[in-house]
Length: 507
Ligand code: UN1
Image (cartoon, rainbow, N blue to C red; front, side):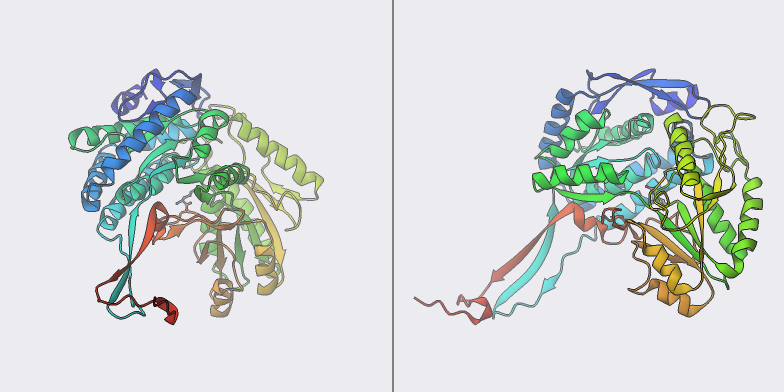
């Protein structure tokens, strides 16, 4: 671990603010523990509100320079960052695992997601296209252009401590924005490591240094300051629904824009004709992967009554063979939850489940033997009803609800009958079922898949969801448009000044 920290520039005590250089921060000390064995791994001197003001000012100043650099040249900086990320992939992947507990292959996958985002953004830097429109007036030309927006606020969660930053940062970067990243206080070290890598690239190039800025600290102090900062036209926030509501309200008060990627309560419909081998694999990865701590985690299985008991048995058997333990070890498929408060939430949810009539058919215990720390829990399967209040909520833990359905109509009805709308899937080989699921009367989620699980989306599509998930879209497709301002331009190259809609106004 010492070697990984040395390579990534993580010290015993680290600064919690960067704006082209690391500041001598004056906030409280954050102690960072690894959920693998509960050990203290480093400290961060967090940013105070005064530190925030310095970062915000610097980001605004450098926006003026960065936005004037041609987009493909900005893309070149992101390309170089992508190359550096490739060099440090192994160490960064391990650091993700050490800091938040996801298994190593997932930690590495997360760094790969950043690399993919870098490549995507480099291409995008030459494709920030606007349209040309047909003017109704003679000798007029109309078109739209996309201009850089300003300083973007990026609030990221512990569960994807680096990939979600890259979704936002690389796109915002090629769009000509500068940014301020506020990572989760549970995972500050990965953000410091990334910032060190970015710093090295910026140093080598003749560009302003306060493009990819960082502040680490409490939501209640610097987080509040960030979301209320009039200098930040857009906040992109990932996290809980309640956090997102707070961000949305604060931004609305000052006419700020938001990209919200909040809670999911993702369901998989399993029809009677489904290929159950495929389904089982997808459910296992979706429900147990990342120890149930993805926003895309599969939380509900809407299971056809004809195969209910049989598939529940298969699942139980598969759950009992999942290797749980040190996430750095090869072959382990489930590591610890992020911290002990997550364990308490898991236990609390299980109590509520019992009170509300849920039947726990597998799991429900905190593991005490053969594990290194106190944050390891059993993945849990519960037979439940869709309208149980606890099923309507997102519990950020590996708890999977099995809900019986009698046909496709009931399945879609139950599926949509939750407040969240992020990701969804159906397993079937029946064309009519899958088309019904994908049509406008089908899944109401931002992501809807057929014979693929709810989690593990590629970066090429726009990522995000509806309802209480917040409506934002990040990463691929044309999600970049949210990071720019659109300008409609009309140019008259004639000798008259005709008015639109045939209005006459001759003096
Ligand atoms: C998240 O949990 O906030 O689709 C993001 C997935 C990942 C991203 C998850 N690519 O599961």
